[in-house]
Image (cartoon, rainbow, N blue to C red):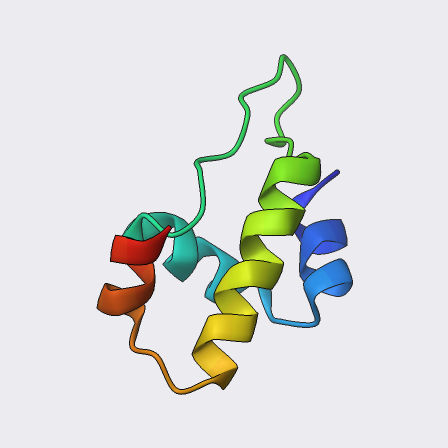
Length: 67
C-alpha cells in the first residue's frame, strides 16, 4: 500500500507516519522499483499499536522502547 493508503487506514496524516518512522516506532518503507515506497500489514499493525499507546498518554520515546 502507499503512504496515503496507510494514512487513511490509520486515520492519521502522512506527516504523522513519517514522524513515527523517523522516531523508530514504525519500520521504514519497503523500497520498490516504482517511484513510491510500499507499506505492508506489518506497518499497519505497528501503526495501530503506536496510536493505541499514544492515546493512553505515552510519549513517543517510551513507545519506541516498548516497540
